[in-house]
Amino acid sequence: MKFVKQCTQWLVTTLVPVILVLGAVRLLLTPLFVQIEYRMPYFPEDSYGLTMQDRLHWSKSALDYLLNGAGIEFLGDLAFEDGVPLYNERELNHMDDVQVVVEAAMRMLYASMIVVVLVYIWARRSDWIWSYRQALARGGWLTVALLGTLMVAIVLSFDSLFITFHKIFFEGETWIFLYSDTLIRLFPVRFWQDAFITVGGLALFGGAALGYFAGRSSRAKTGSLMHD
Image (cartoon, rainbow, N blue to C red; front, side, top):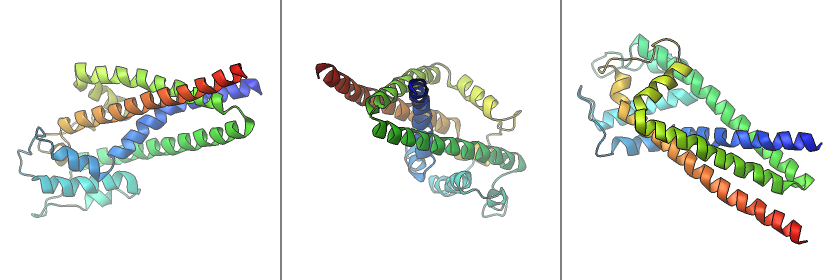
């Protein structure tokens, strides 16, 4: 049983970065981040004519598609006022791929959260909650180490990181578009750079807070037991 508990604790430690990173991603898949990002003074204007209101309108449809489980016709049926389709076939294929990746990531997020909660209930009832908190603290500091490295990579070479990310999750060059394509006009490189920084920053902060407070709680419990 001791071996099982130790393995479970390390499982929790491993799942903490997953939850913090994917939780941050889920926060970004909301209109709030887009609303803020488009209003940043440095955010590039669309040289092909989309206004901020146009971007807000069409980006909402793109975000909705990633989470609503709809078929690609949800985006394929969209068109500009002059009747020109909003997305070309290459863009639709990529969005279809992105939806698959996002859905898998969200399933991983929710499954990880369920596991961590179930382990918490077990630890609480079996009186090893302080070890559970240690596992959370380790996971928090592991997140800090991983995300700290990521933030350095973003600062030093975001383009290389961005390319590597797409090569890992998408086949071929289906994610490469023209500057005149709608996806680039809605979500330019600046958008993704800020998105990566925001996800990394949120997860980094969450990991540090969890590492500090969960660690302090477990140390206080250990000290109390030694004193007794």
